[in-house]
Length: 225
Image (cartoon, rainbow, N blue to C red; front, top):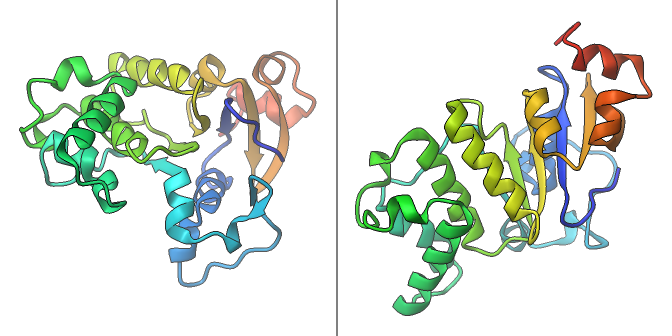
């Protein structure tokens, strides 16, 4: 399969179908698993990801997890953390990076007067958008979302989805979601996984109205999963 630039690719499928494993493979998080093995090849910009320095790869391909994982730091320091890790220490530059990342994550207006507060004081939805901002601050090319709205209320979910739709103008996004309605709302294309196999991938409107495979139709209609 090929992931296209500046698209949102939604990945759907029942539990244990390989969605998160696929996502973790794209920036080699699976390498952390002791018994992990891999066949085949993943290319990023026509280069085998196995040959790319792991730190460079994870800078270019960032990941936002299902549960928000803010660092035990201030809002500002959470966003600035990655930039500092990559050698940016100029105070003025860091302020610019933090503001831009928070704006892109649709969070700036809510936290601009709370930058020195602990990130733990933010709501769950705000913490998730903070984690998105932290990813954006290191200027990735691809953002991987692993069920980013699974624990959020509908209003927070809508804000995260709005952020994703804006972000695709600049980034490529791969979204794993158990919410087929979310996949339909934001995905340019959708891939359906089942039991570790890619069943089909197509434009989202076609997947949801005229899928080629009966199993895709059954899953979307809620007959299993």
